[in-house]
Image (cartoon, rainbow, N blue to C red; front, side, top):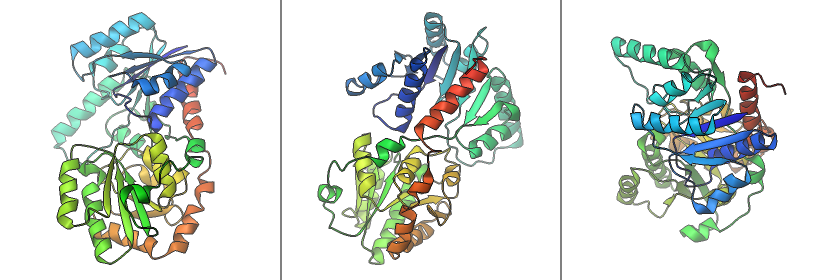
Length: 378
């Protein structure tokens, strides 16, 4: 079996999704199959050996939703490798690439929808037009995969046939996260005083991730005199704007922008933090960063949007608050700050997190899907 994963991303770091592509390649090649990973740029030299050690064949191509150059590049790669199955990630199903693969004889096609969405109320005509396009393009795909039940329902609502949609929840490397060492004292690194609660957030620095509301909540928490520091890991188009906002509020010594970090550094920060928060305002598909925090037993604060709440049991793993509500977010942070015993009990729920959200289950379910589509006997 030859599987070509077409991934519209450049693996510039080793995060949980990159680990998934490596683990999937290792699983496929370990049983005599072949994994071809097609990125928009190659992994950096420091990471490339991880892919080669897993047996992955690395390729690159240009990407474009309706660009002929994008489809021609995919066609050339398919002629070169002659895959039995093509699996699309981080692309729009309404694209020439998906259409090309879907009409290629003898090739099975899987499309994974990782997209988060901003709630909109389109006109009836626009809604019907989008549904028609989704129905048409998804008809050439053999299986559509959503990482959460939320995305599953959204895909059906958008026009994909219900019988064609499958939920495969994301997973993370539990062993790596739980065994992560402390690479650097983050309090010393960022000039934070000993003691006090650290609230960690990991995401792109964009409005849809709720970073602006988190900054406002941090200001409220600090105005109440709570001994809390906030560290945000990630970069994005709004970094300069939000840094300026933090300075204007006078909380730059308690709200730290750590930038883009590798998996070892993130694992270290997770081990030294007290609470994790992801206050998204959009319909987040299913956050891998959230799963990483849960895996090490951090109490979490998330918003009631998208698929993230599927991984969090209110009161056991953390707190769920309304989106776009800085006051509610601040109250949740203060509630955990004021009750260390409650935090301790939530931290103990790491053991109950179990193996379901582990990386290997994600890989195994993916390979089982490939086997079903290609009628491979296990």
